[in-house]
Each structure stands twice: as C-alpha cells, then as structure tokens.
Image 1 (cartoon, one colour):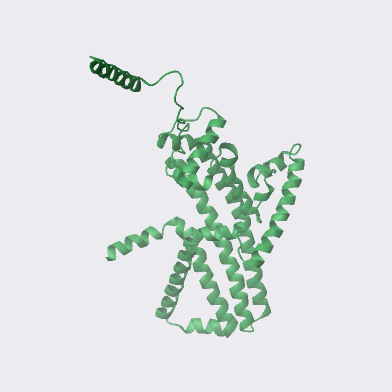
Image 2: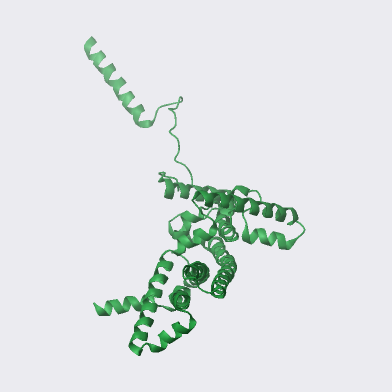
Length: 336
C-alpha cells in the first residue's frame, strides 16, 4: 500500500506538475502567510515570533505550507480546462454576459479594421490568420484575445475541411505520432502553467490586499501586494496569449497533416477532392454526434427502383409460365 502511494505521488510530482502549479501555489501560500503575519503582528513582532520558534515548529510550518501548496496546485490542475474557459470569456452570470458583449463588440471592431487593411498590410492579415475568426464570421468573435486565438484554432479545420474540431480532436489526438503528440502536450502545458500563474497572482492580490485591510495594516504593504499581484497576473496572461498561438498552430498542423490517417484508421477512403472531403467529414459528424445510420458511407444507399414496364424478373416470369401451362393442361384434360 505504501509503495503504491509513493508511486502515485512520484507520478503526480513530475517536473511539469511542479513547474506548472506546485511551485506557484506553494509560493502563494508562503507569501500569504508572511503578509498575514506582518499585517496582524507588525514586521518586528513577526520577525521576533519566527526567531523564537524552535526547529521542529519551523519544520512543521514548512510542511504545512508545502501540503497546502500541493492541495492548491492539485485543484488548479484539475480545473485547468475551466480556468481556460474563464479566460476565454465564457461568463454565464448576468454581469459576465454584459461584460462579454462589450468585449465581443470591441474585438469585432478590431477584426473589421484588420480586415479593411489586410489586403495591403501583411501584419494585419497575420493577426487575423493567427488570432481571429474569419471576417465573414463576426458572430463567432470571443470577448477576449485568448478566446479568439483558441477559437481561431478551433474553426480552422471546419473552415478548410468541414471538420468539427471539438468532436474529432479526441479521436485524432490518439493517432498522432509521439513527436507531434509531445509538441501538442508541451504547448498545452505551457498555456496551463501561465494561466495558473496568472490566476494565482490575481488571487494573491485579492487575498493579501483584503487581509491587510482587515488587519488595518500599513498602506505600503497593501499597495505592494496589490500592485505586485496584478502585475504578475497581467504578465502571465500576456505570456499565455503567446503560448496559445503556439498551441493553436500545433492543433492546426495536426488536422492539416494527419486527418487522412484517421480516415484510413476507421476504414474510409481518402476523398478525391475538397467537395468530397467536406461531405465525408459532414457524414462522420452526423454518425458520431447524431448516430445517423450510414452517415459515414461515401454514397447513400440506392433508392428502391420501380417495377419495370418492359418485363418481369426471371424468377417471376418462370412462375407465371408454369402457372399458365398448368392451367392449359387442366383445361385439356377436362375437355377430353
């Protein structure tokens, strides 16, 4: 039992987990403890209390900080998808919906301005290519920059090949070569790490600032905690935007290069042209999402043909001929 627990702990505490969530979470817990001590006791009394603690007490305090950091990191990793959706702009509350409308309108205006200059400005075209839906899809614009970058990656396979990325991606990812899968996983880990750091820094600014206010602590401590937390949170978000561009590019490449491998794996021929490919992926989407029978077939089942007016099938003709001969024979015997 102990061995299996140690193995699971070792598996969880890998380098990616440590860099992504454990170190930022532990640092957050430690800094909050320092801020609380300074706010309620003052700098001098807090330093005296630390100096008066024996080694065992300091060790127990350190273990408590580490365990609290591990718990917070585990929660952050488990909710990484929800955190990404939050930063994308999926806000369901009434104030959130109003704010989302404002953000979407702002980005629609930016997209329209970029579309007007994309023909003569390569930088504007690149902004659209990497970070926005097509100018003909203003209704799909998201409220945040991060949301538009990820929406751009999501719409790429649909716009080019008719592929529903959300539906097909889990099936395609399972077939990616190790090298490509590693690139996608690393890019997603970088995105998660930066967003977790941004969220933790924002939480620190709120929690530490609120603690200083509650304890009537010094103004310089409130200003330092709030400004530092907000600055780190904003820097983490801006870095996450760049990481999202890389992640989105890897997702696009995966669909561009390996989508036919998925068709071959499920036993379908590679479409001959773009129109056939659009029909193929549309039928697969109907099969996987709606469970429409025969939706993945290359051509629909032939419709039943009406009976021919020029003759009957061979079997039915033979039966009719036999019945006629029998009737004639019976009539002949009756007459004789």
